[in-house]
Image (cartoon, rainbow, N blue to C red; front, side, top):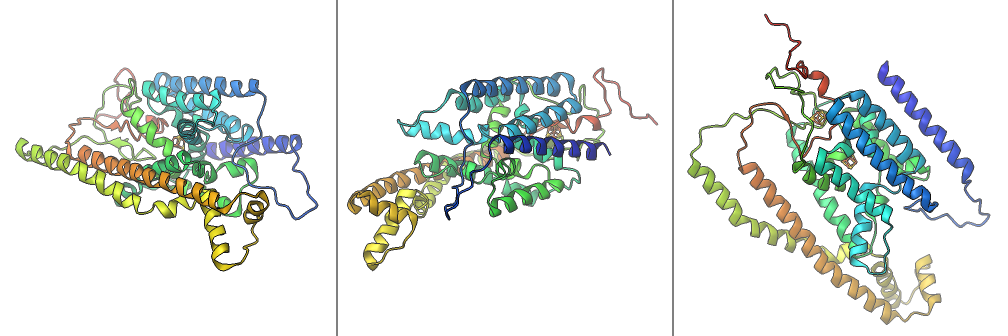
Length: 426
Ligand code: SF4
Ligand code: SF4
């Protein structure tokens, strides 16, 4: 009943904001067959509002960290999440968003004429800083995407490890691809394929609407599918979280090994105590040395394999795809009649210049795919090394990298902060 009340409240809040926004910015009605292009950013707002967004983000992160670490209040986490959905999702229409900001930061590093607003830098840096201090309290619910998925997760099922493990590599692939396409100025794919923004802006394409709906329906059963198996910013947050100074715990006191929390985590982020098999130190050392020797091989193979795809990937860049189109027209003595082709022919730019620009972009992609593949090979090698190193654990603990600080495990622990257990002793 409580869950239904919360969901109804959120839907009401969401609709209210949409109605308000729709009245403030009515869609223009064109009488021609021109279709309004799909945009990846909302209209610019007054600078004061942008600073306001940063203040709200800072306040939300502070309050959320306080609820997670100090108060251990699931209710507090929940209501902060509702606020984030309402403010960053419905009211701000998902822009600026920390997840997408990776691309703005990357483009600004590679293109001197791309000016990045301070607010975008703040949205990129603040969640990472808070994570370094307190763990992924941003993911707990300040991120409206995580909050939304948390809200719909009402019929939890456990994803078998043989499915979840391979899928957990996807965010790394998505991250390097997003960095490559942003650095070359080809596209901002994290924004283009954001499953939720279209709902908030009421302008999702049919395909994206279906994608968003699939993620949400899947999220009813699987805890946070986008966060776990796609989010590229989550990769950076998980690295920061590993190094976090403070981090939430399942129990407020000492673990009594009752196992009640074992399956309580919606993202399978509770590590069990380890049973360390007696294994000779020699064997362990040999495995580690083998993997260390193989690391450069993974790096090289990753770089080489990725570089094979540079031509296909470069075709995503509008200049390269236009050059291919114009080349086809020249070779076939025909016109494709597309808007891009018409615009190019009226621009008066010589085809040779277009081909030279496209060739230069393709060579950037060649270098970029090598770097991207190298990074993927490195991530793969490091993850194997991590599995090779046996970690001794005596208690049930959140995995600092994967735990999204949602607080859902708190209520499963029968121990209070004074170390008293509510379990009946027989
Ligand atoms: S993993 Fe990504 S989408 Fe999920 S809450 Fe964290 S930042 Fe947001
Ligand atoms: S706080 Fe608990 S339930 Fe939530 S992600 Fe972390 S370990 Fe899992």
